[in-house]
Length: 387
Image 1 (cartoon, rainbow, N blue to C red):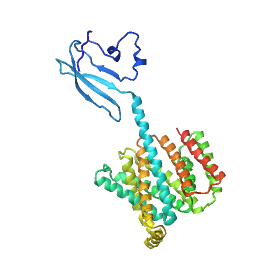
Image 2 (cartoon, rainbow, N blue to C red; image 1 turned 90 degrees about the vertical axis):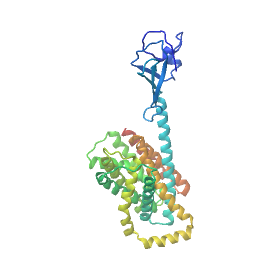
Image 3 (cartoon, rainbow, N blue to C red; image 1 turned 120 degrees about the horizontal axis):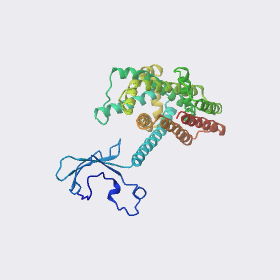
Image 4 (spheres, helix red, strand yellow; image 1 turned 180 degrees about the vertical axis):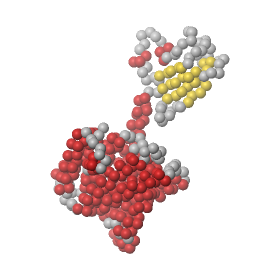
């Protein structure tokens, strides 16, 4: 590139390269990138040549650093071309939208297949174990084949991960037990009350205080869940308590996770992989003690005789999709704020409740649906109040 300039040493701006007559640069060429030339001290009648262009299309900062030099000088001139920030914001919005759509879709598919498996094969402890085993196997293969980067951990990391894994195991099994006894929609209506457990645990166990709107948002959450439970056609105490225990366990999982991950550089995907492996080691002996191989074998034969080979696909699908939806949710935490994640989680429950009612043709009373709507609305208000 060459240019000829008829003035003495100067600082060049975009307006120097366009006609002056009645031309409003900001209004007419606002889409052009900003061009900054630093340390500009050169002869204006000599041609300029491009020496290098760096940092084009960077994820953290979309822009180009362009260096030029005069015909008889080797010292480059710093020229920084910055693309509009709106491009970066648009890219981030698209990325978050893809995360959310994938997260919700995977979660809906998991819940459908999980309920199908539990209807034909009512062994929630084994079903939970298979989900964790499949996810652990997927990540081990990914690390060995270098599809995913192997996490850099130490003994301190695994010590901090242990209480998180215990809480995750309890929450996972309790939710599976709940879905084996009641409708998927009812389990998720009760699980929408998790913010109430979060506030109460943080207040009484950790001494945290919250603004008044946060406490007020608990009223529709608790009231909606109570109304929905009281009007549930196929209410089951084991299913109800399973969902409640799952709420409490996941609250403690989140608390332990925040404490254990301070200062660690493990990505969300690898963090969940390590969590799955440790949870699998914790859960396996309890699953054997609670149900046992003999019961599993008899139940498996009965399910195969009733469903056929499709039952094997159901088991594989629920295990794979469980890992994938959790992995995507943890990956999304690397890209979005906790508030955005909380809103996304609320919308996820709506999609699961609606899709499960349609697919399984779950009978729902109008007052039961009203209770669910109130609880979910309260959850949304809670996420806004914490902003």
